[in-house]
Length: 329
Image (cartoon, rainbow, N blue to C red; front, side, top):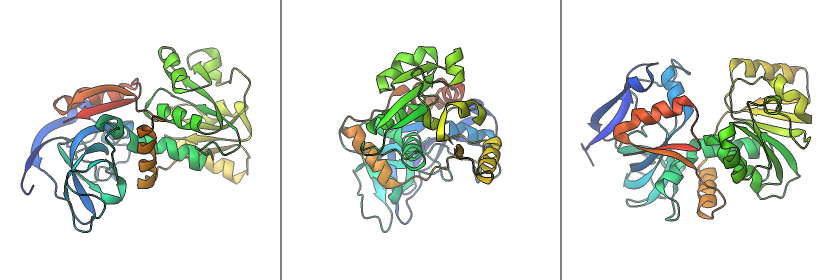
């Protein structure tokens, strides 16, 4: 692979959206210690990708320009670095590349061995590529923050999942229903049947009065809210929370952190919890196995060739995708 050229998509500055993406031919990366080189078969976009381009974490990320974005990939191992024991060339895998390194919008990408897991034949590259950020975020929010046991062994919980037809939301509904939960979900009117099909017990159109009020039609008080949307303050959820209910904010703003601090200082039993994603290889492997067993599915909104990555980028920014947006080299 030394010196091999590849097609990639990068950007050179903050804030230009799809117009800022540039198609380039660059030298394929080489795996270092404990890394694998993957021939990318599918990559998945997440809102964090274009938010970083917009300057969400300026000047921390991207750490340098030009930057090849996207962290979710699935494909085939073609080379391994020193010390790699779990994989060999020819293995089918799915990997999380990290927001710091990116590299997914390319024909080849380098991943850490500990954030790479095997992909069984029953799971397509596109299905697997949707899992790393969105699937792991949903898994962490439910199991660590909301205390849901996905084997159904825990106490029954009432959950609200907002933006339930999106990337994280559609995984969260399915995973929650593996546990002992009653799920109320919000989405747009055109996606009501889709979210019901994922297993939600109750579905609210967020544009209706009841949907805007976030009230369960059956009068449930929520033990936890998996808040995948943006722009809804804690005060909107508070009347519908159980006495010890919590709102788990997956896209926390400065206001969220202020609310979190105030709730902690006043020892309020109703809490707002900003989520900080901590990807773990064993959890990604668990999700892949659920897909293999037919207990979890990746719903694919659309597929785009790498040569038309700008179209996929614009669709993600638009914010109305159902499930995951996939780019295929």
